[in-house]
Each structure stands twice: as C-alpha cells, then as structure tokens.
Image (tube, rainbow, N blue to C red; front, side, top):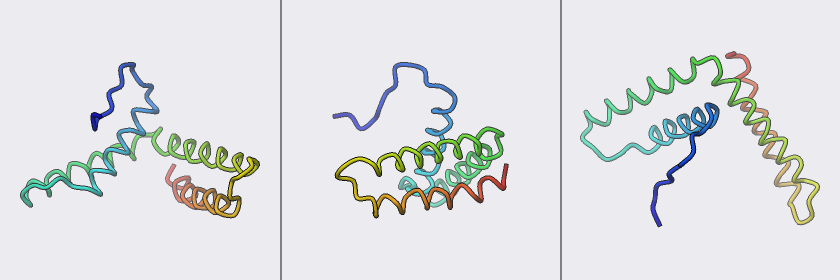
Length: 106
C-alpha cells in the first residue's frame, strides 16, 4: 500500500489551505534527518510559511469554522447509542478553548 495519497480531482481553496497548515505543522513537529544547518534552514522556511498562512485573511476564519463544524458534529454524536457521553463532553470544550484566542487575532 503506498504511503502517499494522490488526489485526482482539484480540491477547493479551503481544503488546500487546511492541508497546507497540516503539512507545515507536521513538518515543524517531525523534522527530517539532515545536517543541522539544513534542518535550521528548513525549519525557518516552515515558520515563514506558517506566518504567511496565518496572515492571510481567510485562514483564521476557516480554522474557526472548521473547529466549530467538528465541535457541532461531536455534540450530535452524544445522542447515538453506545457513545461515551462523558468522554465526548470534554472534546468540544477543548475546541472552544482553542477558538477563543484565534477570534481575537481576526
């Protein structure tokens, strides 16, 4: 099974933005093995990419919308049988906690 996922259809701008954010955060958290100078250069480029993405006008709005959508879906899951409501109730609180500082940036 291949380790890469290939998309044959063009994705919308929102999905491309979220995929780019995921890539940058993943790279910052898991740098590739390389000489220290190369790792520093790549880390700096990733940080600059992240700053560029954050300063786009739609980034914060899209991330907030996505977190709110996920939170709403998790709240709806509470009503399904076999779902641990106590465990699920802690998750939307953490998403709300993440969206509050982000709304101040916008």
